[in-house]
Image (tube, rainbow, N blue to C red; front, side, top):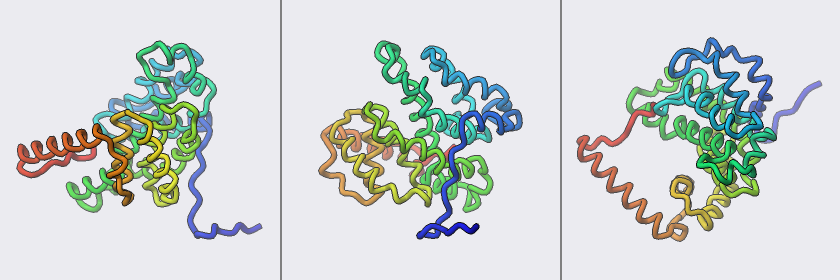
Length: 263
């Protein structure tokens, strides 16, 4: 039997494995993280699906902290990111959004925290970080930074899980999913989602007061060629002017250089 290629003749994105398959097939002890190797990660990742919200909150740092430190990506980061994506629809994680803990605790729901982490990590491996790395270290930057390249290759699988939450009933979940999706769709297989995300970005700007969310979607819309002048409110304009002043002051202190390495 033969299988025809898609009409666009593009390879299909890799499917997201199940959480258990990722735990069982990953050689965690061989993967570097910020300190040591990742043999402790399967237990911490499993606790993220505990029905006890306090256990989930405690597990967040144990599972995610060791694989993302100072905006760096490690060997263990990709399998952890895939595991996180694979549990976004886990009943214990999704139920936590409406739990009493979510209403009274100072901690944000596990689902939102996981989406935030995926988004932050994706921004640490986005095209802008690659461009900065290439300016600093040459065009072979990604060839040397294999961990970042591996994360970038995994973006379609991660996006498949994030995409399912873009229409979530909870505004915090869907807005955080949107912010996470923005750097993921820089992958060549995902750029067709840009128009749909732009529409969601406009809806976010019409309702959300979250400074970080607004900054991210405004930056994305500008990068995609949209006129955002009618979408900005007074707070957005003040924030933009403040950021520009900070950049100018920093550039002045550093003799005109204002970029950080992406790790």
